[in-house]
Length: 274
Ligand SMILES: Nc1ncnc2c1ncn2[C@@H]1O[C@H](COP(=O)(O)OP(=O)(O)OP(=O)(O)O)[C@@H](O)[C@H]1O
Image (cartoon, rainbow, N blue to C red):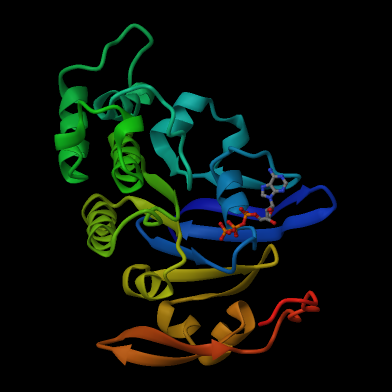
């Protein structure tokens, strides 16, 4: 197996809660792994530990055999980048300036972003369709435009491994599909390994090679979309009843209701008519 990222027994505790509780995973070079799970199950925390943005309480992360804790920041950034859920909207810079920052790990301290580096910036702007926005400040953009600008910055970094935390959140459906196709292109044509936290389960099934579900800080299921997408999976992990259909080899799920009442409605305050 040609694994690029290996995490072993990762754990993170906030207060007295084990938010991530012993997760081990391997990402094979060139695969697209979708990470799914209920809100608050520890997906982002896990991704942040993989990207060395949080120091795990326990466990290790190795990238092509190297312990990420021992790598210097610039060489890590040349190989791996993470696009977070919410990026700083207050940065007072233009889209182009942001995308240029993606080249920083590739520049010597005295070097300016020009020549081939500027060509990479142009490519990332064009691929994400942010070229028309390149002279606008980030603060003047809509949520979706800003998301695409940050993706352009991650692409300009030309990493081998791309970690994405719900990258389609702010996007309308057409831009969601465009972004998924763009990532498919990076994945298939350029061999970029992708780990993506995603809430849209049908999109996960359509695009990802493999799915890993996280619940209560542990791995609840993993396998190909066809292996994972079973009614019992939706019941156990998400608490919903669902039917699964086959759409030309891709499983499609259709939720039909809540599996079991998980919270009581509580006492209604007196004096409220409804
Ligand atoms: N810095 C922090 N300090 C304390 N608790 C935190 C911190 N970051 C996350 N948590 C808590 O850890 C739990 C897991 O959060 P995390 O963001 O990893 O979940 P998630 O699965 O990505 O959720 P979502 O799908 O809602 O984005 C949540 O209960 C969250 O409130």
